[in-house]
Length: 119
Image (cartoon, rainbow, N blue to C red; front, side, top):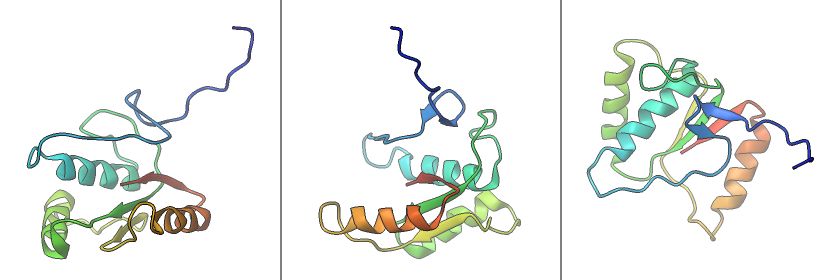
């Protein structure tokens, strides 16, 4: 109890702390759409989901499902005519967990000191 602990660094309001977060739900419930919107908000520095403050920074979104067309179409609707933020990096392929993904993420994180979110 006497240990002086640093405050928990939050990425989204008082809901999402820095660190690992697993989001799981039934298929087709909107997980990808929710996280795509969150990624855009963090990259833009705009409140997430309408009212949650974000820690603005670079975002890596690994879009391994749905394909480039559906991802771009959803992103275009979210942007509503605005340009995509420079801080939103989108990858359409990656190695698998345990087969190189960890080193790919470490490399990206070391290149981007302003990184806030990886999806």
